[in-house]
Length: 381
Ligand code: G3I
Image (cartoon, rainbow, N blue to C red; front, top):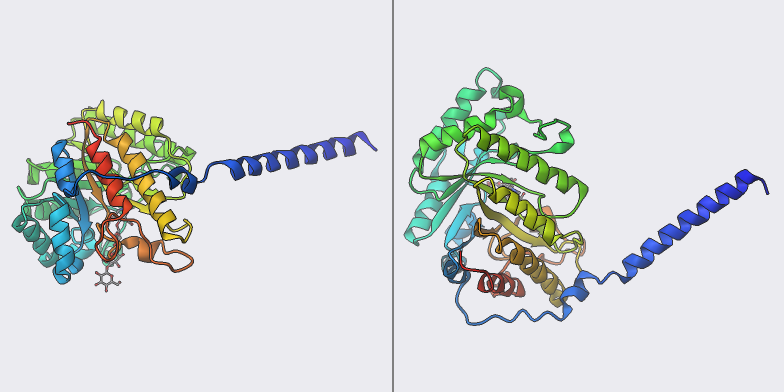
């Protein structure tokens, strides 16, 4: 047999061995199900999440929509009972607020702000600058000549309207996208093309001018797991925050969306802790702004699914709530009755998704227990 043939055979055997080894390793890696199968999610007492978090000087809340709150009283009552702060899921985005270039539509957002105030709840604003949820006319009507004026006018009008009524604004959302290849890691999108990277600072200064009391946040996603691309995202977000702070930009917080995956196996508590510490060392607060746990790829069995979802919430919040700069946790919805995941990350088996603290019948799930336990074991801020 020629030297060449021996070399090739050795290489193939080696490769085969490697693949087999990794499969065996995966086979015996304790599955998420095994991780949480025996965890008892026992909780002391019945008090709602808002009170458990308040006891530690923290805020708990959820994303809500005008449609669900205004048409579902039992749900609205549970929201008011469990939450201390709310955020509109879509009603403060350009698509909802700007039906035409010269008209604003505040009916739904006004209703939500008034609902919160009538229930003694705080309200977050989401979001003033984003590449999604833009009105159809945006692509044809906005260019480098009018972009600055439009951005300033939008922020002055929207933030000005709710001045003194909004706890914190996500001024800019998801502006970091290292895959676009820029050295600053910024996302290539219209605002950047029209105004250059300073559009972010411009937006924060305009928001601060319109409501000097509101806490102003930069909000982003995919910052949770120990993967190469999310490490690059954390680095780019930190760089952006350092640059904004170094230029005296009125930015006060980072919003970490925390859309978690129940099937994820790359959660690294140490890396998350370090990232949060680095953000805090810039003098910034941190808010977990859009937490949920997708069960799209989890086993169909409801108890197994609920255990993995609950375990994912608890493991993440146990790390996050250790960081003194963390001031609030909001889930992206409160009940499985209303969740974006049902339409945007449905299960192949069409079984209803279960990513949130309350089930579709508004009953507390293990996920609710997990969030309550994390608050109960958190240190007082
Ligand atoms: O209100 C209209 C309704 O009148 C119309 O009949 C219906 C059918 O087209 O659309 C409704 O608008 C939808 C809106 O949600 C309200 O339900 C939009 O099409 C739909 O795109 C929008 O999806 C929202 C999405 O952001 C885009 O704005 C999701 O509910 C919302 O959960 C999602 O939230 C984002 C955060 O803002 C940022 N981070 C990720 C997160 C999940 O994608």
